[in-house]
Length: 402
Picture 1: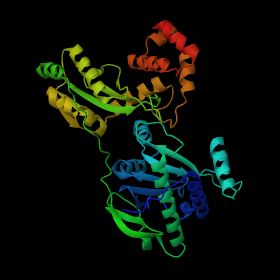
Picture 2 (picture 1 turned 30 degrees about the vertical axis):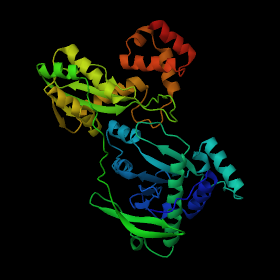
Picture 3 (picture 1 turned 90 degrees about the vertical axis):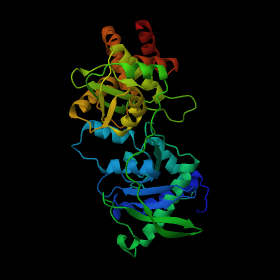
């Protein structure tokens, strides 16, 4: 276990400003991953981006889930399916310190960085880099403030990055154990703080696959009824997040509703997607209601992603439906993308959805269009209305049409 160094925000900015001056993105590639063993026992896998024209940043991917997020990012291709990119964006799990230039930074980011620099007796040149901190979590909207744990982890990573940059003035990356991570890489160089020094070792890389807990289906009566039903046809199912954050009570960042798309290989799209309000178990109840309403269950379900497989595994075991892991088909991707385009009022690859765009589209729509909206979207808008998250003119109109 390392020594815990409590990190305040000013100290974090000081480290970030020092890091920006070292310009490690001119030396390291994002594939040259190094690990830091945190005092709490977790391991952070660090990647410096910016050398290849990407956003300049230090990204920390913590543990198995974080590293899986890094692996997904490295698989990005300009010609990839929009839904593949959408999954990367909405499943990102990392602590980030980005370094945009002044023209690319938000006003609030510039002001915060300049204020911190002033308190430290420093200044940021006009063409300098402005440290900006963000926390990304799967199924959540990003937040631009780090909690105490994430601040400490970012401080550790920045301090280690400065140490590595200093060593790179005299040594080549390979001499420090820095190698480009590929599919065949099994371990990376790792460092642990030992007082004022750093101890070097190695860290085994996780599998690169994101772990998902199996969702239990606990409705015994419903499971028995579906188990006894006749089984007809094959379904393709996939899950994806809607980029419309819904703030829950006590949440610092809104969660992104999870949607389950159901596609019958013979009949096509069966119903509007089943959409979670934050509880995956409730999605299974909705799925059971759908099957009972059809008086027939599929004999096989093909899952287009691992999250979908974990969601349906116990349900299918209890209802005698064969469940298989399968690559998503173009047909499933197209159906998911069409739904996202309809609901979000834009492309599925938007990194930051602006709700005002949807509000304007809904206000311009005819009453018949609003009445024909998918029921999950109606339910979501009703919840947002109850929470006071809709423009009042739109809320009044939707209430009138209910």
